[in-house]
Image (cartoon, rainbow, N blue to C red; front, side):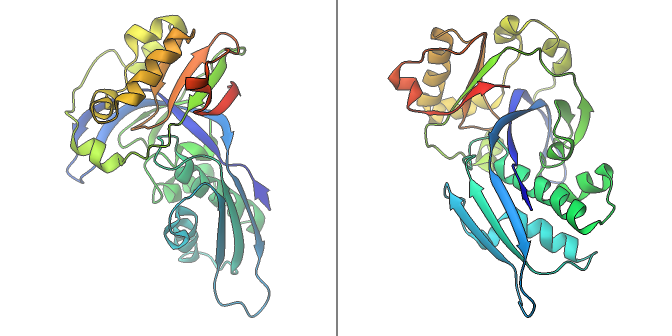
Length: 271
């Protein structure tokens, strides 16, 4: 069975308070994009005594610590699932704020549920996905959503009008989300992001902010420079996604980017 776990971008990200459980409350808009990994599995032959996970493409760290195996272990506490031979081809870079690992885990849950007829509904799947990451529940329905709490409290939003062109840049820098949160100063602000989301995109530049940018751009000035260059080349709106390091631009049409930007492009296409 094969599927294509997709990335997400954050349209705005506010860090509003610290929680007693060690996490932070946030406000953000998750938006799915067409940059995808490839994930497939087959059932291991009779007599096999373990799962096998093969990862190709981008380096995703130790396969034994991969979130796909984590959610599989969680499922096996409830359901009898045979050992699996899993292949994950990584296209979404880790440590980029694009949710690749969480997406892999969430899509894998959906694949297992469908293939083995577990009968789990979306609420069940979201609850299971949360063990993989705060943004993982979003990928169960994989539709534009306003997120609060840790990122798991989701409210559906309408998609943007068709016709916009998205460019995502990745400069090869991996950002530690944990370290970025440690440096943040939570602030509660009004109005809520969905109010600004309904405005014309060209107005977002002055309205929708990612709180991580101030923190991350100080340590990695190149990311701020990439954002400004996207604006210089016609972006209607540009932002870092999540805690970085991916930076994206939304354009009215496909741009002609200079080499200084094009060499960092990992996605260029429609939403």
